Image (cartoon, rainbow, N blue to C red):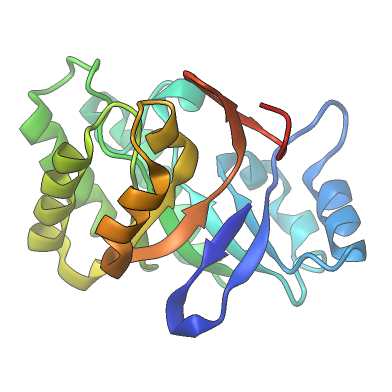
Length: 212
């Protein structure tokens, strides 16, 4: 479940990705039938952009940028600059067709050794600065709350209001032993979007509610 909290008008929806043999258009049509008007998409929609225009009528989207876990790279990887540039180009040129309201990014993976961590953060934010949509930075299990806060401050310093705020993920705090409610209260003034899902006590598995 995702919420955009700006202007006190929450948008509640779901992440859309390929599921078994079901394509994006089929999944989006099914969600619209039950009243969903907000979805989160990713690079997997690129191959079906021309089929989505009519499907996305009256639907708002968020775009989750690539993740090392799923894609093998993210916006902090200099050796994937071609894919980064392609992603930026598609988002900027197709943002109206895809109804993209904002993008969501993760901080650099700590396990990555492509660059020194601080340099990876700088590289990430330089790439994010080229997007023509607002960006929200998600808290991830790799980072303690204080570490996340520092990288968030770096982002605000480098790209200003382009970094619109925080994407607060409850499970990412929970699996590391942090009370999500206390973290919500701590980061409240920065939170603009929310990720909610069920999980195992020590594993982020994006389960439906009451499944973990």
